[in-house]
Image (cartoon, rainbow, N blue to C red; front, side, top):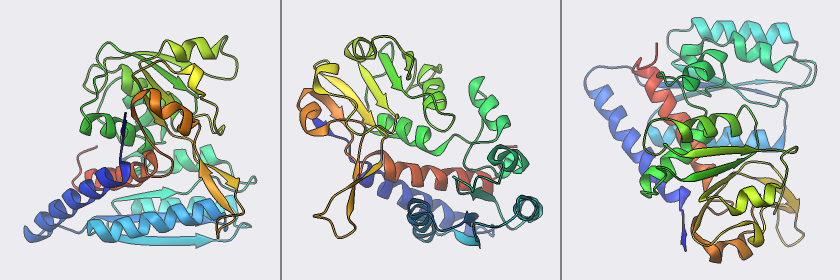
Length: 292
């Protein structure tokens, strides 16, 4: 059993990006610029955005953080999105989700210029992904594919079960795993709350990508010997022994599942760091106008 070290791989990729940025600057190019809009004070979002700002520094990017209180109007938020669309100095930007209930998230996503949509959520990018055209890939699925690539994990012809059908992880990672590429070329089954005998589907899988948000959902008796497990789950669960009062818990019962696996990602330290670095990769693509 080998633990997939997302933290180490992410550190390597940030160094690679920083070198590319140095080359851009040395040849008279503009420093890549990522902006982020954060609404309210959600703890998870605050941490995530802070990590993005730190990653920008490591990669040599310019970063801008734009904050609004929870009571910001939809009109004001959309106005700022349009302003960033028109700002030639901003190569890419994100609007951190979730947003307050009075704001239509889909309207905000669709207002973002797809050429600056480094989160990969715009319908144009989602559509391009579906038919295999160049696009900004959703950060978490992109990170998963990069982990499989860097660990040389064989996916061709393998049975891959994706647990979860969200627009952010489940659907795009299923699409990537079935594309005519390596990693890819897998036979993919997407399971969800209405899937009959989900345990049997998992037991038949060579690769399981768990993105349900249900702590310890995947048990040892659901995993066959030698399976590859990618755990996307990051649920905060109470833990009185921690200073924070909580710990992050994955969708996989790591302690009991890991001994059966050929490869497995831990939580934290697996997929999470790759999500941040994938956003950096998309920003570099935007800065070099590789997607248009």
